[in-house]
Each structure stands twice: as structure tokens, then as C-alpha cells.
Length: 309
Image (cartoon, rainbow, N blue to C red; front, side, top):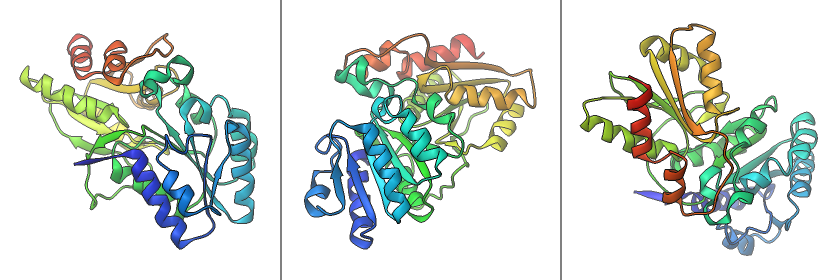
């Protein structure tokens, strides 16, 4: 089973808006693409299409929170971050205002929208903002948890996730906690940290490696800020060779975070980082792009064999 992440977003927000007229949904000319059209029709007083004006949308949402409104904003990852960074800093983080940002189609998920719509640097930007809660959900249950966290404890949230279908990794009874990572597969021969859609690709890669005689542990590092330093330290003592897989630049993302934590306790670990190195986005479908950038199961498995034995 699984679900399109944009459907999770629309359905969850519809329930919020039915119960609380302070919940406002904002989009930047992507109402159809984000799957939010039904909500815009059903809740005309609680929905705003900001048009192709992402910076204004972020500032407006942050300002609305001063009046008690709980704003949810959506746009593609590059427009949610690099285009709006000053507004995120000044109107959002620095002013301690509250908003939830759904940053969709990060990295290779931009697909046929091409290089202009590709963001390999969004985590690096957002991690530089103190106090922002940053997550990368891998399935519907994780995404719903994050949306409910914002409703119950409004702050500035940044959620990077595709709009597309994702198989379920968890179930409705799974307990999540910000700052706590999940071991979703255990093995004795090594460990891979990953997040978001790369959880699925990494699990597929471990099946390839299993056929070659290697049993790997896989850790879902979905909560990037706050993050699970205790888990990193524990795993670093257990496994000498550590691999990180992420749909992001090799600078400023999950790999940097984990490497930093490991240097605080030990210098003997070997860390290999399967990520985007020195490239910008391209046009293509998801299967082509994940192969092109080494994020498909075969590439991940081969990278492990070449660098982590």
C-alpha cells in the first residue's frame, strides 16, 4: 500500500480546516499540481493562491501567524528556499513567526521541469537557520505526523517531500518523535543512513547486496533538525564503515550532519557519501535521473561494494 504525498497533504489539511478556521492553506500558482484544488473550492475563506510570488507568500504567512493564524504554504523546493531565503530568515526565523512550508519535488523529483526547478541545496540553506524544524518524510504516516506536530506545536517547519506516490514504510500505529530516527532494517555487515524518498531506493539496494552475501542496517534519518545524535554515536561505535544516501548536494545535507557528529567521538570511521557532487539538475523522468545521479538501487549497492568494504 501507499499514497500520493500531495493527497496526504490535502486530506490532512482539509480535516484541520474543518475543525479550526485559523488554519490557512497557501500556494504559489500550483494549486492543481499540489492536489489542493478541492480544498480551495471547499474552503474559499481559508485558502490563498499567492500566484508566482513566493517571497510575498512567505512573508504574508509569517505575518498572519502574529494574529493566531496557522499558515501552511506550498511550492516547489527551489522557490521555497533559494528564491525566498531573505523572507524565510527575516519574516520567519528571525522574527520567531510560525509557518509550515511544504517544499515539494526536491532534487531529482523536479524531473521534466528541469534544472531551473531542481534544488540540490535546500537543506544546506534551511539548516543554516537556527530553530527551524526540518524533516524529510518517506511515506504517508510520517508526513501526517509532521503536519499534526505543526498544528499542535506551531513553529517554523520545513518539510521536503515529493508530491508523488510513495509506498508505505510504516503503519498507522507507528510512533514518531522529532529528533528520533528509526532503524527500519537490521544487518551485521554495515549501515546506511538515508531519508525521504531515498529510503525506498536504499531498501531496494540492500536486497541487491543481500544476494551478494551482505546484510545491512538501514536508518531513516527523517528528522534533520532536530536530529538523533545519540543514534549516530551508537551506530558509529557499532560499524566502522558508514554510508549516507541523500537526494541532495554533498555539501550541507545529511552527510555533513552525520560526519560532524562522528568526529566528536571517533576519527576511525570510514564515511562514504552517495549524493550529488558538483552537478546541477537536468531534464528527465525519475528513473533516468536517479540513475544519472547515482541514486538508483544498483548505483547505491555498487557504491557500497566499492567504498564500504
